[in-house]
Length: 218
Image (cartoon, rainbow, N blue to C red; front, top):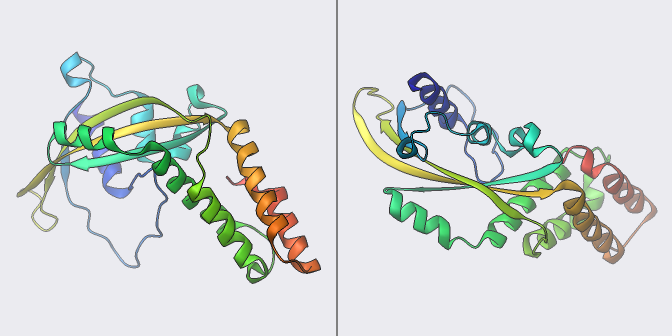
């Protein structure tokens, strides 16, 4: 149990979940502060190991999507941090789930555009911006919260590994939607914004390429 929690803690130090999108790592070496997971939701229930999705979620929602029980699902993980369990849980309950899901989706759409192979992206810059904006404002039907978990973490000073720094709680909420349902809604946005975009033949070809390959890396 302790070995697992130590491994999980090390992974958590390297990856930020937000439901959110990952930023490129800074240049040069990075010092990771030492910490321990003191307890988690299952501790009081006599459950030694958190469910598989918890460790997977620390590595990112795409890792959760590879688990057998979430095959064919699009996953969003909302992560809330606080100083005590009651306050952190309350903050998680007060979150506007629709806003958090739309925000995460807009970031993932933006990342997908960034990796799209469409030649000169400058030709469709305004189209991509409009799609991202629309995604951030739309309420997507079909999402549901399927699980949640919490962990208590004790951090130590980065430059003094044996000196206590602070304790924190993290509440993880797992949301899922069938990929086919989400892709249908996203396709409407992609097509709708394409129809509203002033076109040249080159721009039309670039937008067609984006729509044809968009979900391959999504």
